[in-house]
Every structure is written in structure tokens, then in C-alpha cells.
Length: 385
Image (cartoon, rainbow, N blue to C red; front, side, top):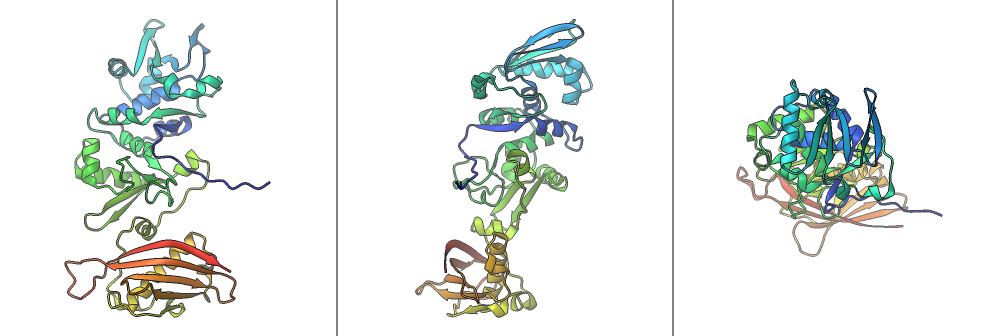
């Protein structure tokens, strides 16, 4: 029996899956700084230690019972994990979390050990009803999205908290979020379905200046942790996470292409001014335009169809890899900028049909009748034998 599988992460899901191994990796990565407020990191770290079910731990000859959502360890161990120099800094963070009703804790073993309990553990980690065993450095736990907003709102976020905030708000393959079918995109659940954001919005969210946000995102990008896709004008930027799919779903990560993102979000695509760039596209001999459109010159049409063919090739359309395939562009009725794009196999085996919308955008620096920054939208069509 054959099955068709579809992988989908729901944007309205109130909790996020956090893998313990992922948190351990972040702890070891000294490139990501915790200077500033790292309360999100500290709390998630405590959650990563918590038990799924009651067990026993023996420390210095004494056996301690550790229940679900609890853990006991030395203060020195927490100090190392939190990257603190002094133990009183650890106790200060624990006291803060206790005052916020996130945890309860007590000192034991002549004040060398600390035992803490995550108060919302049983509510958020409902797998407890199955008495599911989970090794300390493996498996995952659930983390509530609502707690993220509270924790990052306690002051200026550190690089670590910014990365965790991005990671928790990554959305993959959700029909409600534009661009999530391309890869794991950052979406802060603002009910628009549009993942576009700006450095100013991120600065307000994380309590940092626009320049600092720009520097931190550039650093995380250089560390190969994310990709920032900027767009000109007031459109903003889109952020995609790297290594997300392999960590969360154990599948291969994907490469992000700016033109593909622009196509998915209906954003402008830039056509170069150099004649050679627009008059000699890779597949110009394969493209035919049956009806002229005064709003978009033919050379620009060839450049844009070449872009579209490369995007479709990356999405697995086999005919786009063939040098003999023909691209037939014809207008839909009398509407300007709306075309039927057919990709025709020279052997008559397959043909694909798409609706292609190209709308020239207003350009303050353009003196001609049309802009060199077209707005392009491609709607998936059908194929026939």
C-alpha cells in the first residue's frame, strides 16, 4: 500500500518543540554571546534539564527523588551552563523566575545543590500521561509561545535570546504564511500571513537599536545560522533559518533563493539596466512572445521568463532542464501584464501552463514609460500529456 505524506507546521500551535541536543549545542557555542538579558535562554536551559517522569539521582552518596518537571544539580554546574562567574548570579536568576511564578527552588546539600521545579511543566508537556522516558541529552520538550514574549520583554535581549526567539517563531510549510513553503521562515504571528519585517520592528521587539540589530543579524548570518533576504524600498526583509529542518524534522535543509522568495511574496524583481544582461538571457532562443505589451519590453520579458524557468527548475519541473523546451508567452484577453506561460516539451510528452502577472512598479528615478523593477507573480498552473 502506498501513502502520500505531507509535512506541515501549524502557525497557531501554542507551543514549540525544543530539542535538548539543540540547547546543548547552543551552550557550547561561545560565538553566541549572552551579554545583556538572556532570561529566555536561562529558562529554556532549566526546562532542558527537567525530568519527564519521576526518577532518582545520587549525588555524593545521597539519593534524591526528582519528579516530573524537576531537577537537582550543583550550583556550580548551573553557573557554568549560564556562563556566570559567580554563584550569586545564578541564585539571582532563580529568585527572579520564582518571583515571576515560573519555578520554585530550594537549596540542599549544605547550600551546594539546587533543586528546582518548572511550575507549568505538566500543563505544557502533556506526554507525561504516557510516562514517556526521555534521556537527558536527547528528545524534546514543549515550550509555550506566550512565555517567549514575557521573557524577551524583560530588557535588552542578548544574541542568544534573539536567536532563540527567531528559532521558536520559525514556520515551515504553512499555507497561512507566505514563503513558508520555500523554507523555515520567521513569522511573529501578527495575523497578516506576511513574514516581512524591518530592523526597526525587530529593534523595538528586542529592545535594541536598529544598528545593533543589523550587526547581530549579520553576525548570525556569518555563523551560518540564518539567511536575511532584504528587499528595496519599504518592503523590509525576510529571515530564513538554516539547519532548522535537519534539527526539527530530520530532513535535508534547503537553499534559499532571493528571486524565489520575491515570487512567493509578490515582491519586485530587479531587471539590470545593462543591455547585455537583458538582451542575452540564457534561454532567449527558446522564448516566444505572441502578443506585444507596451508596458513591458520584450527584452525584459525574456529576462523575467529566464528567471522563472530557473525557479521552476529548482522546484523540480523537469522540462525547465531541457535546452530544447519552448516557452510560449501569450496575453490573457486585453489585460496588461497578465500572460499565459506554457512550457512545451519538444517531444510532445508534457506541457505545463502557468498564469504569469508582470506589473511595472513606479520608480522615482525612471524617466521612461515603464520601470526597470517589475512586480512579478506566478500562479501554479497545470500540466497535460
